[in-house]
Length: 72
Image (cartoon, rainbow, N blue to C red; front, top):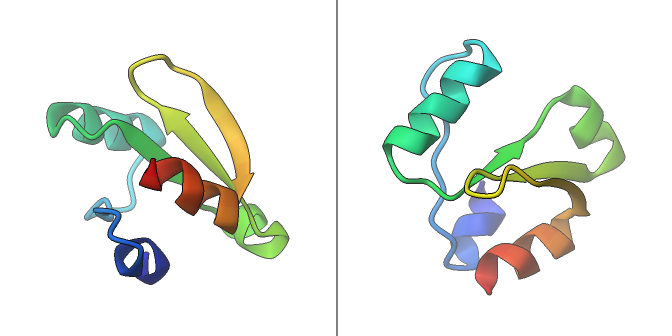
């Protein structure tokens, strides 16, 4: 999250550890266009899942690719 913010990318953590569907609903209510899914596997591999809530498309990106995509 720190690296996103230092690259001028607004970011927010979901306040509670609940089911992922609740997290998507929260983002949708706040008109957040993308959700980044970060679990232990993603941290270990350094690959993050980014979901576009408008299109429903999800892709796996490196940290650098994630920052580049969200910066554009």
